[in-house]
Image 1 (cartoon, helix red, strand yellow):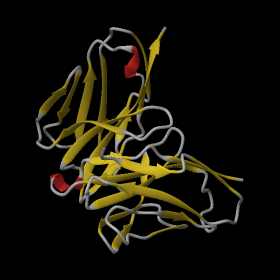
Image 2 (tube, each protein chain N blue to C red; image 1 turned 30 degrees about the vertical axis):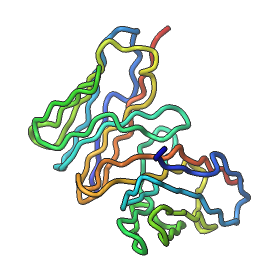
Image 3 (tube, rainbow over the protein chains, first blue to last red; image 1 turned 135 degrees about the vertical axis):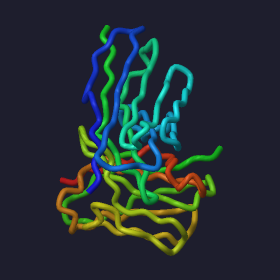
Image 4 (tube, each protein chain N blue to C red; image 1 turned 120 degrees about the horizontal axis):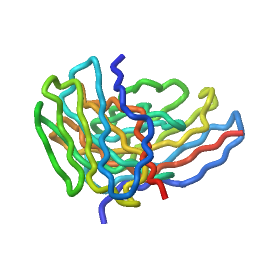
Length: 109
Length: 114
């Protein structure tokens, strides 16, 4: 079946640093979505991408839909403590979402 | 105040018992989904429904059952046939258009079976 490879698995960063994470697949997707999940809660949609090459921002977050339609990245600029959590990518195909395993963001004290 | 509600937040059951998890939405979304999440893993699709009285199996439907009698409600039953039912269960819904891809989630139910 289709799979997404999300990396890195976890990140330890200092407050104020920029963050970058990505998802890759051997399959083509129609849509790329990025979600954030806080512990014990449901994922919250951050950014949705619908066109190859599309670059979209949401505040300090920027995401891109890869030109090959097989990858996407998410950047967070100037990280703050409330950015901690798990970030998931999801690729849309045939009315379903295929999920990455998540990137856990931890801010060093 | 529109949203998706799941109840209860925590659920404890003995092995061998069936248990039903509730999911209600007032977003007027046509499609609804159930996912299972295990520690350190992504979400895995159990069942989904695109319209009332119709639903489809996802990747891991064995040991689960659903119904969709109303647009607002999509309950999930975890049966005794599910071999490893302890997990975090998430319900989601999506609106027509945009390929049903933008899914909005409830707060989840953590089920523990002992």
